[in-house]
Length: 111
Image 1 (spheres, rainbow, N blue to C red):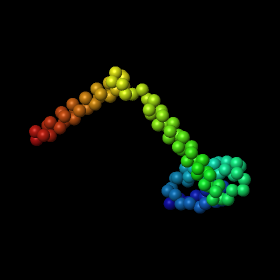
Image 2 (tube, rainbow, N blue to C red):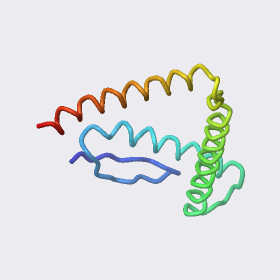
Image 3 (cartoon, rainbow, N blue to C red):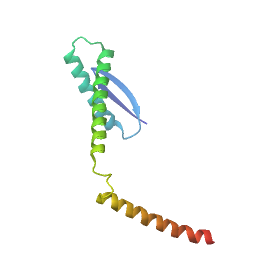
């Protein structure tokens, strides 16, 4: 088990993590630290707890926006029409796979 120290909102946190994850945790702490600084700059005098609360809310808001964007892009994908070349190719591959599967299952049934 590895140990690392993260600094967020001016306070140090000693954590244990799996070996090799120290850099990733430092990166995540950096993201939180930037949001904590944003909170402190926009509302001076916040307590440590409220600073971390606002940092978490900022990050959650970004995550929510990204999830919406991904969902919107998935809906906009051009798949779906029966005459769509991608759909036709997938259907043809599916039929071939089913035929191969049936061919492999038939000798097993005879045995």
